[in-house]
Amino acid sequence: MPGGTLVTNTKLPCKKYYVQNLEAQTFDDNIFDLVITQDVFEHVFSPDRAIAEIARTLKPGGGYIMSVPVVRRAQSSRRRARLTKEGSIENILPPEFHGNPVNGEGAIVTIDWGFDIGAYLAAASGMHFLMLEIDDLARGIRDECNLTLVGFKRPLPDLS
Image (cartoon, rainbow, N blue to C red; front, side, top):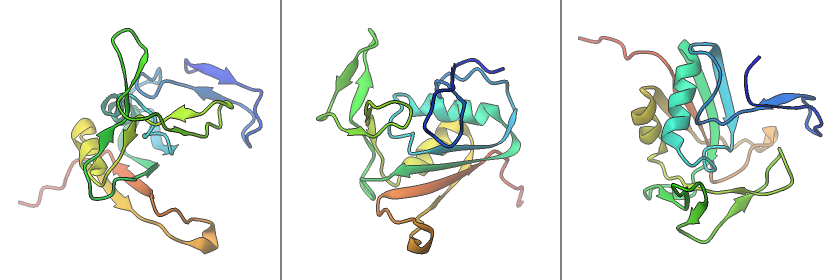
């Protein structure tokens, strides 16, 4: 069994799940074929560590799919909040919170991402990323800021 906290009293469709720190997972290396996160990376304090952990837990050839608000679009990503050495939250910009399905409290937004998120994730993980904007109201997908990134844990082809 993985570490983390087992949650069994939930109103979510899944009746039990583990909550883990994405920046310091307890899963073995190369264990997952696919990892999915939905609207998480704007809330982590160390996205470089989080994506490195995802890459570590993916099998070679594995994939990662994430949705994330890219509110800054063509502007550079910026930090909104960070952890101090003492472990408290320091707000750099006025605090912003999103809904949190795990508990009723809001989740603080730590980063306002721009289109540079793909390059950032690639540099921190060694993975390759595609960025997709999906607008399909027939499938219930409409959010001008939410983008989908797909990462691959595989080497680039030798084209020499």
